Length: 347
Image 1 (tube, rainbow, N blue to C red):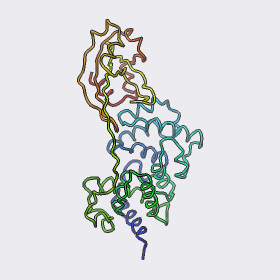
Image 2 (image 1 turned 180 degrees about the vertical axis):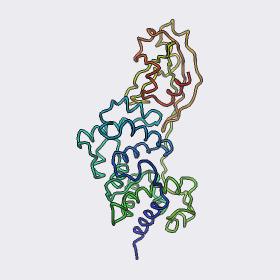
Image 3 (image 1 turned 135 degrees about the vertical axis):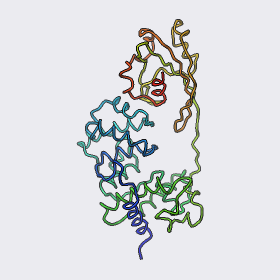
């Protein structure tokens, strides 16, 4: 009689071959550069959004050497609109380390991959399992949901010891044979199940290949898993943006400091209040200010209330503020926060 773990692994592998996602541009390859790039882009971002960015990145940076050699501004510019820009900065830093420290070849083990910038335990495992057939578990949000439901694992994942225990359980469930073939399929299969069938609020248990062994389904309460009691504390911040432009289309921009909101991206001058914005300008420019419509931009931990303030000015008018005039033909290629790009495009 087969061990339940072997049955689960065999079931996931067989299902992935027949019904999993097999046509995405980063699949059917063991190229760690492509798998790594997709894994970073897919963190907290939907597949439909990533598809275009992935294609553009590969066209501009076809390999890790070309990415490492690029200026960071070029990387941020291509990433612009994808969000979570620390991913792009870490992506660039990681590429440089792969080239400088590993002769342009990604390490072949999850443990070694975790030493690179921006690669955590689950991402490292995904690369090692898919590209090199290493027997190592992933545990991203989708996979946590699948496994906690299958095993009715009800411990609070807000506590580190319970998350560590789940990592151990996930490792016990891994395939044990023909790893070069089964580990990529199993790893991709769990991600596919979490993304398309074992949904957060409406799990499609009737078509799930694991339904027969799913303890949460037997209990009749799959939505009770996973358990995580710690709630994300959100905050709010109001920001006034001095959107200054010349009559020939130049805009005043400067890179944001690191760390901070939109770190490393190009922005108009930001202020904590309209009064602070006014005080930063010479008296003769204050009468030309035009307030735009306030709008909310949602970040992971914070809601930003953005107050655009428009100013048309001669090119010599802002020399006292950090930044520079950027021509209309140039600024669209810079790394701009999505709401800033939207503002400037609408003007």
